[in-house]
Image 1: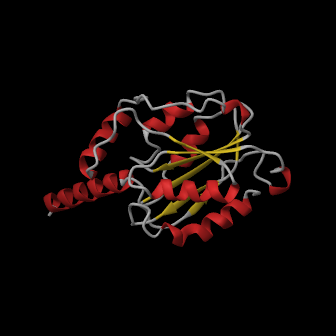
Image 2 (image 1 turned 60 degrees about the vertical axis):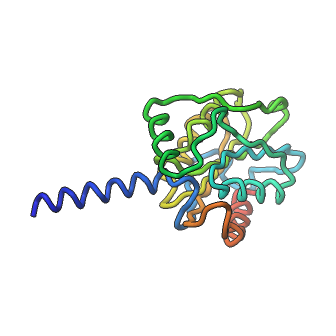
Length: 209
């Protein structure tokens, strides 16, 4: 009986791990507060602010959501792309992503935001991979001086944000922050993401847009 229990527990842990890395699929949405001094809507003035939506996407879910946010806010867009592409198949991708995370690597990424100094607000949109953001996202964040800018985290996930939103905040300690949002969905390729637009609208309104 003990042997059966151990086997069952091991299977469950494996499933949980894969769900955490499920590249941009998730179940429900939720907000994660970050105790920012800018959390109050009345303290946040959008007038004259220049906005950038930076995103990393593998299956297409985060790309769809990021482009929706950018269109709604008339923001510029920058896609974070790993120099060496991840495998297109799910399992090899999860294995490579986990090894990269465990080694705390900062993989090279393509291109840079030449005029980052001009932006006041930076949305950082990512999928949840192994309980956090993909490592190329941290490569991106560490390339710039984001001191004084408002960084707003957003993620798509299969089971929940885990530490993804707070990890983006922790990676930008000299920035101001607004509450992040996690959209959970079981779809891939951006399929059905339009069903979550109302949640995104509500969130943007709550944080002052």
